[in-house]
Amino acid sequence: MYAVTEMARLLIVRHAKTEWNVTGRIQGRSDVPLTEESRLAAAELGRSLAGERIDAAYCSPLSRARETARLILGGRMEPVCDDRLVERDFGELEGRTYDELGLADHTRLFYALSDAKGAESDGQVFARVRSFVRDISARHKGQTVLVVSHGVCISYLMYALSHDSWDPSSYEMNYIKNLTVTEAETDL
Image (tube, rainbow, N blue to C red; front, side):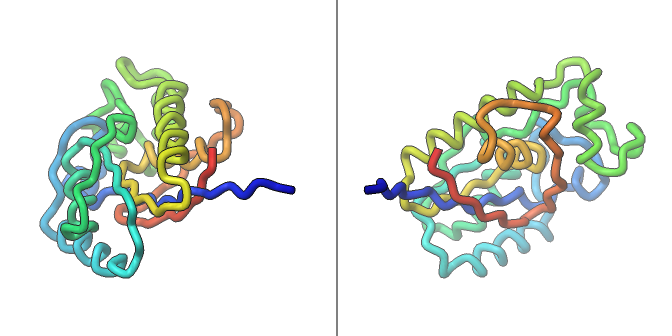
């Protein structure tokens, strides 16, 4: 006889846009507020998810993710801030534009980080998001969990759902648009 494992269902959302997103500036841990237009878009996303059962909600402690989560939830519950969902620390690259660095978008940022002073390592990002996924999987079996974070952090989180350890040769950074909902299940 086989044991049935209840999986946690994750609704993973990248925060709404900030002025730095609009101008192509690398935010990282800089706490940049949402634009007014993006606040309206986040509230609209919340209305479109109103029929979804959401049992728990987690977000990065940075205001752009926290406010996005609150707008999506529309007062249903208060999201729990979790430091493991904060954006990657880009060190000396933070505040610079993709154009200044000769990058088409943030998917190329992964390669520029290897020489950046003060940047968080790949292994550090992977370890913290993998820890988050394990905790959520154990705590929320059979439940739907809203997770609001940042583009690069979400890319690592998606990798952590299917990998036990960090292997840069098998990692490809994905571009995740603001307010994109990615659904995933986990039973780690």
